[in-house]
Structure formats: structure tokens, C-alpha cells
Image (cartoon, rainbow over all chains, first blue to last red; front, side, top):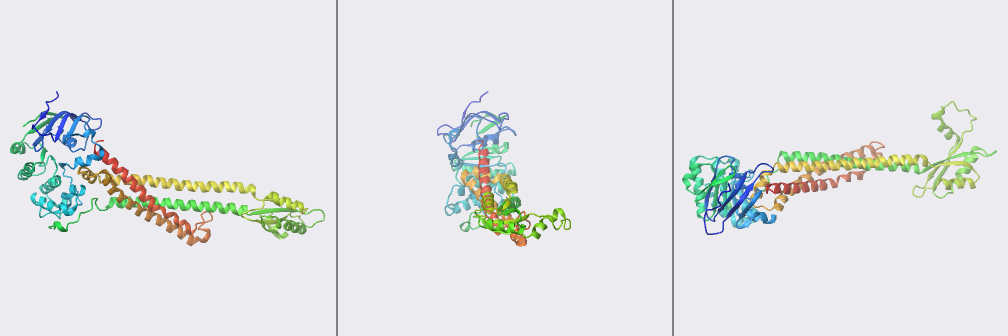
Length: 234
Length: 297
């Protein structure tokens, strides 16, 4: 059954809108089917479900690592299926992603990793050096700026990934199991960072199966089961 | 260790060269070495073929038969004189009787020839290599001088030798071209493999909003430099071998089949450029292909 479209917050144009979206890898059966929801600007949501439910696949559609096999995905009011390939990088720069496996560049220092999106956006180092240092201090890595990722703890890596994801002040922040490899106190500390970012205006969508974290945050939840959206709303 | 943000300089977006790059450089260097060596072989084969053709086409042999009471020596002298006046002949020399007899010795033995055996006399003719006299012109001149003789301009052999030489030359060129193609194909495969090993770097840059051209450019420059270095090592080693062969064997080379010249070492000059270009192109196409697959396209 096609789920009811979930317009989670009324008013402004949604940052993300899915309408009848399906996704498959190659010729495999659909990983996601008939997904319909919207995320309003400045909202904060969790997306949850059992392993293999399609949480990471749904995030991939939003951060433009995959295309839907049918249906329509709109980002910032633009249907991504008609966005020219040359415009995709600009769209990606408006999205901050924290990957489940963090994906830090091991040959670059903490500072270089955090500054990467600004460098890619061709910003002058002189214009952002101070901001990056401030951000790293904010996530508790002020004393590790010169370190290589291999020397960081799991929590430090996760916080560096967060710093990299938000340094370009994205319109939306996506996090895939951001607390999967850290202990509970660290998970709460990371959650506080997300809440703080959201307070500054960033739309946040976190994929997690950590019920405790969701209960603590008390934010609206989208629930996926077998590739279908079965619950949502605030 | 703490870092002063004001003194921070951006680090390289691609990791420094590692063992995988060393393997790529080695493989491409070996293939460049073989390509340049094959090219030098083709040059030497061409030169050898040219030499054989010129050696045969630059000479003719005239068989003289004395008339009536004419002596062999007189007939040979008359033939040489008549031939010397033909345009395209640079030298006509009547071989002495002993020289003609010596030519028969390999077949008949030294002591088997009776002293009164009428051995035909020969005139050795050197021809102008630029404009050699034709057999017809020489026959005509001999007829006018009333000398009974037949001219052998080696055309019977020359055609076969030239065909064989041409075949040897094209075979060498074909081998050189095949080795160069194989080198290019392996360079493409090795470049793709090396790039696939850095997929994660490429993916992070891509999803952070880097333009495909910028990412491809990074890999393109890296692999162009590696390809050029490999071409320099491989081509340089092949050139050293060519120069050593020339040094050891003199102008004849190490064997008559491969007369190597000093200039043949120049065949190595295009190797760094060609290897660099192939590697750069392969890296660019492979990077763009990978990026397309990362967009789910």
C-alpha cells in the first residue's frame, strides 16, 4: 500500500521532497518502494528501521550518490532528475554528510580533513582558516588539528566527520548511524552537536537504530520496514 | 601536536606515491623498454635490408667469351673498356685469369682444374648507386664494341633479396607496433587498477561537491607524471642498450642483421611523452567513469 505523503512541517518549501520514490541496485529487487515524505527547512528528524530496511539507501538518494528508479526526488525545490550534471556539484555542496564509516582522508591532517569542503568550493585559505580552527575547537578537536586520522579515537573520528560535514554550512545535514561506533556518553555528546547545529538553522536527518538516542532527543521519526515507509510525523 | 591555523598550508588532495604506484611505474617502464627496443630493432632491420639491396644493386658481373683468335685477356680488356664508357658505370675491372679460376675452386676443388681449361673471363662492374646503368645499356655497349658477353646485373637475386628484406623490415615494424600497443593497453589497465585502489578518496571528493573535471585533473596529473617517469626509465634503458651495441660492434653493429646506428637511441625520445599521455588519458577516462558510477548514472 502506498503510504500517505508525510508533510512533516507546513509552511516553507521543503528542503527534501520524495514522491512515490523507488530505488534498486542494478537488476536486484527494489530496496525502497513508494517512499513519500517531505522535510521542512530547519527540521530535525530521525529515520529508523531494522538493518537492511533501506535507511542508508534513502540517504544516498538525498546526497545524490544514487538515482531513483522511479518517482521524484526534489532537493531545495529542484527535481534532481532534471538537474544538469554540471550543476550537481553545487547541489552537493549544500548537503553535509556524515558517513557510517566516516570516510576521512587518511593522508590528510585533522585540519585538512575539516577544511576539505571549503577547499573544494575554491575558498581562499585565508578566509576560512580561523573558522575551521574554531569549529574544530567546538567539536573538541582543538588540540588535535595536526594529527592524522589514524591516531584518533572512534569518537574523535566521528566528531571530525561532523566538523567536515558542517564546515561549509550546508542547508541539510545527513548522518548515517553517527553513534554506531561510540559509547553512550559520546553518543549523547554527538547528539548535542546535532541539536546545536539544528538550532543554528541546519535541517538534520539522522539514520539510526539507536532507540535510546531517539527517545532522548524526542524528535519526529520516519520508520522504514522492508524498503517502505511505515511511520512518520511529528 | 597543536597547529597554528594562520601558518597552515593545504596538504595534497591525493595521497603520496606508495608501493602500488611503484609497481605501476615498474610495469610501464618494462613495457616502454620493450617498445623502444622493438623500435630500435625495426630501425636496424630496415637498415640491414637497405644494405643488402644496395650491395646487390650496386654491382654487375659480365661474362666474356673470346671470339675467333681473340685471347681471353684481350676480350676481357675490350669488354672492360667498353663498359667503362657507359653512363652509370663507375668502375669496370677485368678479373685476371687466376681470379676467375679462384671463383671456381669452391665448387671444383683446387687441383681438379686442368691448366688448359678455357675458364670464362669475368668483368666486375661497379655501378653508380644514384643512377645505375641498366643491363640493356651495358649489353648494347658490348655489342657495339663487338664483344661476345652476357651481363648479369643480379636482378634475378635482387628481387628475392629485396622482397625478403622488405618482409624483414615490415615484420620488425609490426612487432614494434604490437609491443607499443600492448604497452598502451597494459598502461591503461594498470592505471585503472591504481585508480580503483583510491576509489575512497575519489568518492569523498565527489560527494563533497568537487567537480568531475577537478577530480579527474588531480588523477590525470599524478598518472601523467608516473607514466612519463616510467617512459624515461624504460626508454632510457633501451637507448643505453642500443648505444652499448653500437659501441661494442662499431658501424656494423653487434651482428650483420642488426646494424645499430648512434641515432637509433633517439627512438627512446618519444617514450616518456607517449607513456605520460597514455597514462594521463587512461586516468582521466577511468576517473570520469568511476564518478559516473558514483552518481548512480
